[in-house]
Image (cartoon, rainbow, N blue to C red; front, side, top):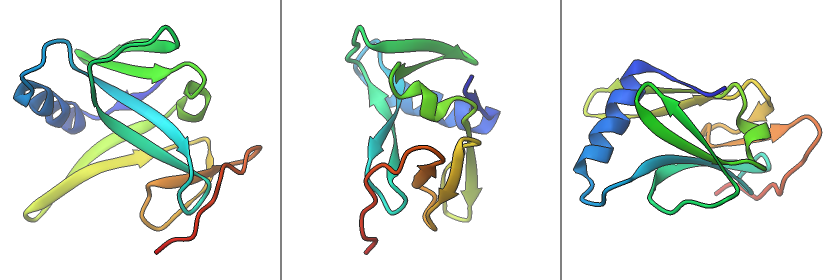
Length: 118
């Protein structure tokens, strides 16, 4: 199960409302790379695949490739505003380490493909 805070849901709904393409949804993904071995990807999408798992989280359609779901089970997504900016936050209980930027992580049983940070 993936959890998304009320503030993050509202921000995602605002982003979806700004799109002129019907049927857009939130896609969550994990890619090899980043400082710690795996990187998160989160964005709006309208292309579906047979490999996708669909969830309705507080009225938002969320899609994850079924092979990547094991990395994201229990994921918590929040949104924090800070002064004139803001951003999404991610807490992954499956990660044993994260990099300083919070965008990459390491799993206990998989290394991924760590890259040098700039």
